[in-house]
Length: 121
Length: 107
Image 1 (cartoon, one colour):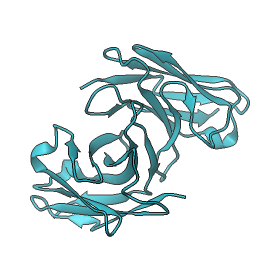
Image 2 (spheres, chains in turn orange, green; image 1 turned 30 degrees about the vertical axis):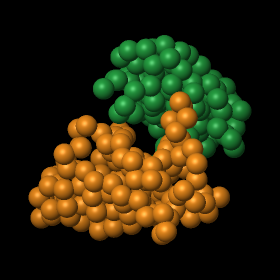
Image 3 (spheres, chains in turn green, orange; image 1 turned 90 degrees about the horizontal axis):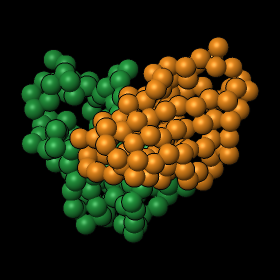
Image 4 (cartoon, one colour; image 1 turned 180 degrees about the horizontal axis):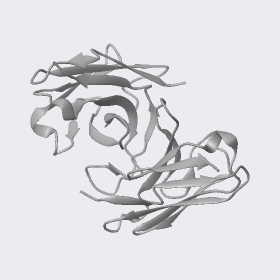
């Protein structure tokens, strides 16, 4: 059974860089037909797609975050990562990683349990 | 970006009720809609993809329909474990976007 687990600091200072890693277990990040995505949810609010990455490192970013966003993949470690620079309080959210289907349906499943990142001095 | 508007934003219902949640897109998205269930403190769970296909392991009381701009998620007979927040999502164009959510509460 495929499982994903986010890891990284829970507190980041304003103007600094947020860095998270998602570790995939129970399956290979190199599996065909899938990308790997990040989605976030501010406390009490809805879901926002941040971006995604393929096993070969092709990236797909939300234009609203593109200038601050970098994603990478490490197939040897079965991990993919997110860095978001120049963070502000509006970046406070639960960050989820998820497998992203590359068919026309492009669903997200399964998801990691999520990790809360707070931006505060 | 394509906007998705769900209605209602919240809904009270009883165990055994039939419930329908609507999702309207700001432009046609063909059949590229997915539905998720989220319980408090948990990650969203995929229920329906491609408007009407039931994800493996999801109970058959969940169903989806629609195409173009209007979609619905129906729960045929509410069970206690179904009280949660539901989100629609479009995959027609990038960036993928989500509705604002519908919170289903116990009456």
